[in-house]
Length: 274
Image (cartoon, rainbow, N blue to C red; front, side, top):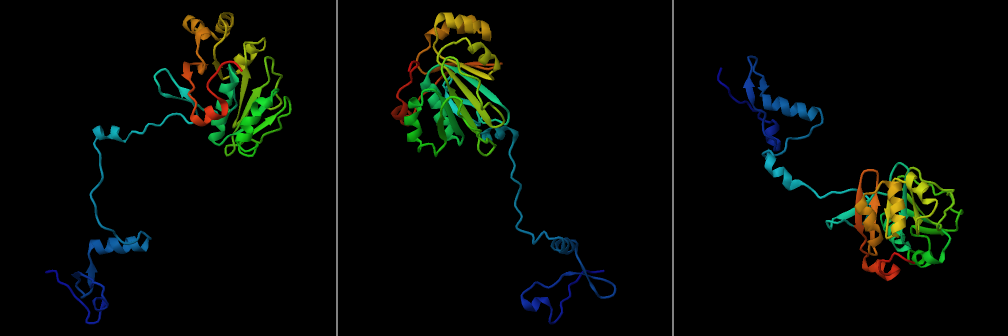
């Protein structure tokens, strides 16, 4: 049978809507074509009207490398490595994380400043609060991420994924066991000015150890404790200010901490001794 169209004298076409088109069945009723059935089915199930048709957006396998993004670890930029690439320390973790820094106060304060800049709250436990007072005032008097407490006086911090905490323990050569320990979203950084009798225990418990310039005897002792190579043992007494050897279970990396202008204005230039 030859296909033809029908239109009512006062049908939908009279109101600005295209008339229904289809083949005529044997009883004279118009039969919708396949496209009409699909359109009404889509409308019935809530998919809306069909939009304009466009070609697919495709890339060849050779073009995929052009979409790569330079994404590194999430954390605090603590300096640059030997290749000049940013060295990142992830302090905000869902598991306990202990860091020991055998080095100077300047480096510990830079780490605290940068941790606060990432949104962490910093609680400093110290026997020399005057060394942290200027920094606390510069950050808003304890209202903007940094608080200073006497040794043994750090209250529970209530760390969470939304409000991670870094506890800095600046308690001298023989820091007492802390009341506030590492936990989920709460890392602890213990600062030791030199290699003390309690250092081996703290180093063994730590997930990460940072070592700045120390004496040859201290380097030899620490090398035995940490299993350092002969090259690292010889290098430690010669490190310049601002350079730290960071050691984890699987990695050894020399990092140079380069201060920003704001950090120089607040803390001065890098130094090992305070």
